Image 1 (cartoon, rainbow, N blue to C red):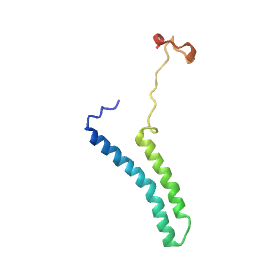
Image 2: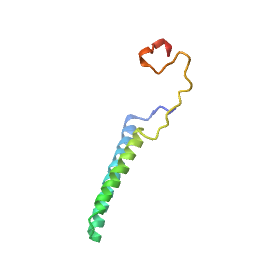
Image 3: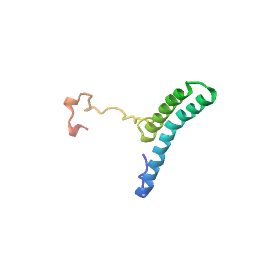
Image 4: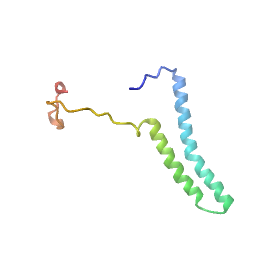
Length: 95
């Protein structure tokens, strides 16, 4: 179980701002670097590779920091005798 965050609101906000800024850089820098490589080497595909890599890694990082991926599902344990998977028979007192 995670600890409650007792930092001041501004500290929590700045933490999120830094993480979102990191996502922006992770998404923006690979295409910029790819464009620079295309200009330097006279190619036409490195910018596209940078876009694909930047968006993929940026979205993965964004989902990771928000907790949408990478979290383990807790095992609820064995069912009790009066539990069922049929929601039509669920009762508040049965849980």
